[in-house]
Length: 59
Image (cartoon, rainbow, N blue to C red; front, side, top):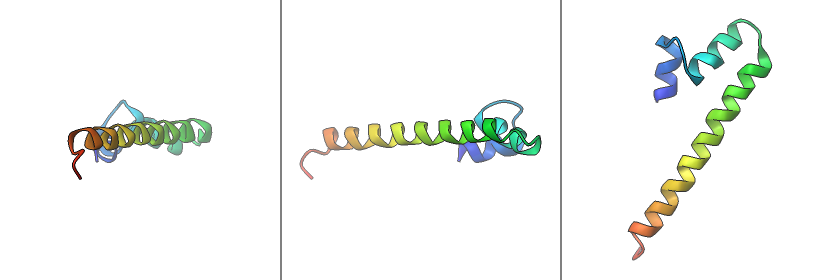
């Protein structure tokens, strides 16, 4: 959600990098931003799964 909002109105950040790279046809930079967001998402998801297992071990 934050990335989507950042893509619309920000002047800095990963969302801005993706959109500005797309508009200026800097495709490698665009994919680097997408890959970075994907990796961050995977790390956050894995961390939350581990936290859930630790806190809700009885399930």
